Length: 464
Ligand code: UD1
Ligand code: CA
Image (cartoon, rainbow, N blue to C red):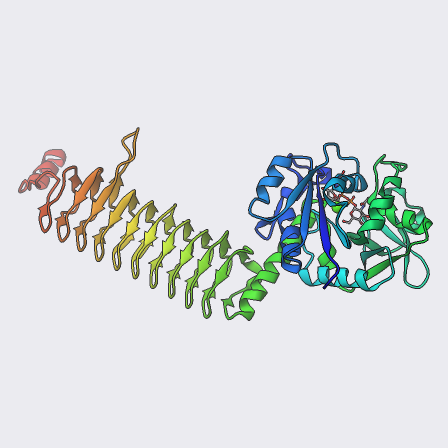
């Protein structure tokens, strides 16, 4: 495409209908904020275009959610309507030739393909602007399209300002437009706040351009899904569902088995390798990467984790910011709190909690343990009920367990502590001092058996 194109994304409003202290465009669907979805679609369709995001309400937070994207910001300090918001971009964008597409930050489902169609339709038309429209069963809440001749648009009427017969129109304004930039800037000053809401409606540009003899065309979408605007939490949930379905579909077409895909929650940034299986109700979030031939058990939650190949996460396990190398198994009911690294073939079983712990290749902690701030070598065995006492009430301390060490069940490892390679810790020990390599550590009191004690007691109590 030769004609240059720039983008203005309006995201300054509060969004009163969300009933939230947070700006509407900061609410999340499909794992990303609404405005981030819009920016990503633009970046995917037109990687080299200029993108200006209009911020106002909670501007700092909106900038923050877009950190890492190649966007500029314009500030609309008072929210006086969508037309007023676009005027805030004037300084940044007025010099740009060609096309100016305007998108709203609360319409996150728009695809890159549709954006390209919008630009192409405008470029090839003689119109001053192309508006994306669609026909809705229930057009409530949207601006209505007043037809002109020959498929053109004469005006857009906001619901609040519409006559009863206009309310019956089911073709709606999506809030996505592509203008001839020069014409827009020449006439945008003619917008007036002459409506019941006292706002500058961008939608009035269609009529204004018409008065100067310019036509407005439509890109009519058969499938309304892409243009759904989010105004309430009900619509937010519907958009979330659409993103989840899209993501699950993309993964399945890429060779991932998803059981009951309508129940899983997989964020946009997740990647999963071929022949992996995702069981029902799994949540795979953030930037989690999963290799080939893995299995994620039902109701497990993985957040920003990295899994190699053939990793099994048994049901009801939770892991955050952790790395699981090839062949690792965790769960059921494992909890990997943060920054853990499980080397190849390590196993973590039920009711085991790990925090900032490295578990060496082939090592096992199968039952009821807590390992915090620890470094466990390879082929070590951590017995049931082992606890690292890593916190003295003020500071955290580290525990090191050497290769091939065997820590007996119900051991208490008081950190800082070093347990040498090949050593044994007897079950039930409280270990406070370093254990040399290949030694046996017994940290418990010796057992005493008193012969006949129980029988004598019974006799004393019950006589006889
Ligand atoms: C708008 C359209 C309506 C269309 C609908 C599609 C207008 C006047 N109406 O209505 O025709 O059918 O979207 O979803 O344009 N914003 C600002 N500054 C402001 C006001 C709004 O940046 O002063 C931003 C908001 O953050 C939001 C977007 O513009 O992302 C749309 O605003 P919203 O109030 O939701 O417009 P609608 O009433 O939905
Ligand atoms: Ca809206």
